[in-house]
Length: 167
Image 1 (cartoon, rainbow, N blue to C red):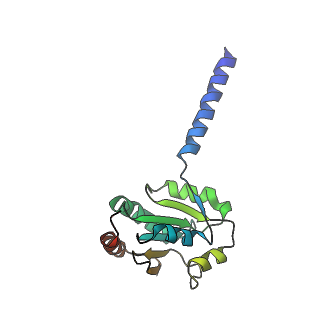
Image 2: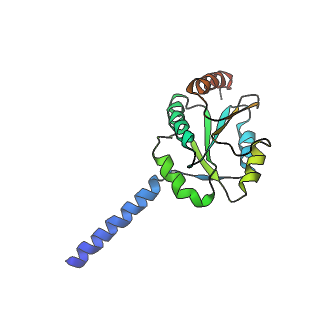
Image 3: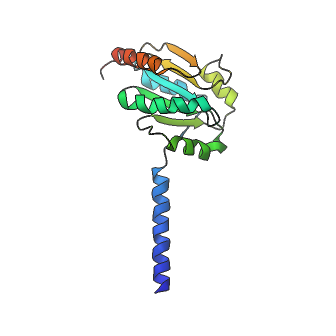
């Protein structure tokens, strides 16, 4: 009888562990080619790329803002990229779990040197965070260093939605 109870409890623990892993957000590797691939795939549809880090306190404010805006503008693609090394994955996931980021693509720097990734994104970017890139329907890019205000996000998202082709 004790053996059955022990095996049953062990089974429930294994099922619980699998469910916990299944609920973990999908975090893809962002490398020096990723942005070019995204731009190519997007064509004339606008999108936003936001770089942040677990060690960046102002970035948390922007994560909360993005969660809110992502729900209000589900048609605009948003990529949220942790500029943290791959070995910081668990810290990145813990931070992300505190926010409702449904509909926002979650990425983290891959195995390449951070400098190479930053250079591929923007040759003038030296790693300041948060860093936001607005890509409009005409593939023009507007970069912001520091926290973007809710009004700036709103204005860009509203104009991007108006510019976006209906497909």
